[in-house]
Image 1 (cartoon, rainbow, N blue to C red):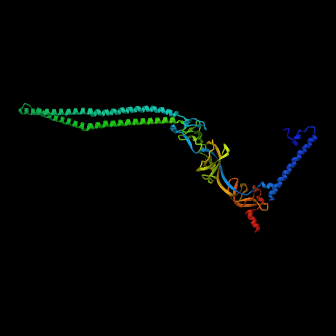
Image 2 (cartoon, one colour):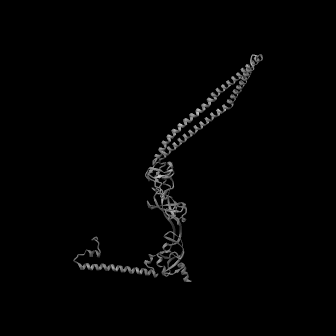
Length: 494
């Protein structure tokens, strides 16, 4: 204890050991003062409580426990917390199609909050699998090119075979068969001449009948040979030639279809290769516009989405947002017990956590028709709301926390009392009011809206009356009466 303190107890403690009588005297003074203080406090407390319960005259202590009813403007708010977001964002999405439908890995990403210019680096996705696919696609493309060359060669061969048959082999065979026809006709003519000569010699007796018959058989054989050669020519011209042409033309069509298929396969391979190249290019993301980098984290899902190096994202998922600082709003969750009080365009007073001394004005712009999924079993039911910030302050960034006070009701010149001054008994509401005689009485009241601090009283108390701030202490000491002091005064006069 410091030596400069000047008190009786300190003096006692610091007195010399030899001055025992002085020490005892000062100690008695300290004890007596403390005892007197305790007794005085007890008496004062007892008198205060007795005066309150007896409904005695107004004292300074009573004034601290009452509220004078006034006509004032009433405002009711719904107060919630929320997070600042931009209403207009440039969303940077993952445009990489993962092999096998999986997720894409973030290898490198710019630090959140960085101010970037157009074409600045934002993030790099893993492209190793895509580069491997590109190499495999190059091998496939080379194989497809080989197939196109072979199909073209087979088509050229089929066309040449058709031309060779139509303009060469067919004509050679035709000429050969025509020669056979001429030879058969010549043999028939010779056989007929020999038969005529043999017939004359037979008549003269120089040739026997057997020789004549042999000559007749030779003529018939020559006739058969002529018919065979003529039939062979007909078959070759009318049947063999069209059939061979059809076969060769069909082969050409087949080879042409094979070539087309090979070419189409090659085109598909080339297109796939171009797609892979584009995917590799999309793995490196540059800023499409200037702005401030904000990660698209989402902690409202059952499985939180956290954007960072090593995180996996799906195709189409927003990874980074570049917000417009001139179009900002606050996203707030509102309990289902309060959501019916809120309307679009309600005035909102916004207090930013980074600068609570400079509140900004806003207005409700959107109320979600359906609640958020519950975060846990039995958790509160909450609805999402968006509150437009009318005049965004400088350096306002997404992610900042804010408290929003949504004005849901505003009344002018109404009677209102502190909410703790109203008691509920058996479904009715009461206030404990100072009566005309200076005592206390209960008064049944009809209440309206409340804002958590004050409640509007539609009837039951008048302007200027005094209501107790702790009616529970007085309830058992006063009897319920209905009507205002003005009404009671009128009744007394009657």
